[in-house]
Amino acid sequence: MAINPLRREVVRLYKNLLYLGREYPQGSVYFRERLKAAFMKNKDVTDPEKIKKLVAKGDFVIKELEAMYYLRKYRTLKKRYYEPEK
Image (cartoon, rainbow, N blue to C red):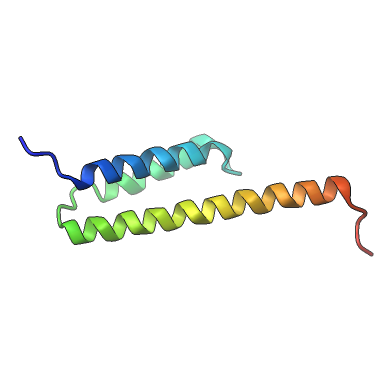
């Protein structure tokens, strides 16, 4: 039984997104449900090129989430330590 070599990439992507979803503003449960729905929607895709495109899209989402989290932390620190601008 041959395992699809892209399977490892998909599982890695899912785990990374699941980990990042813990800090999601609308809650980790909301994020987990949306993540599962997105992966289940594409579970029957077998074309390697299509899978690679979906993984690339997932990697982009990871970068967007990280940027959102960094921005949120920056704003929190700025509010905490600097005077509000008038």
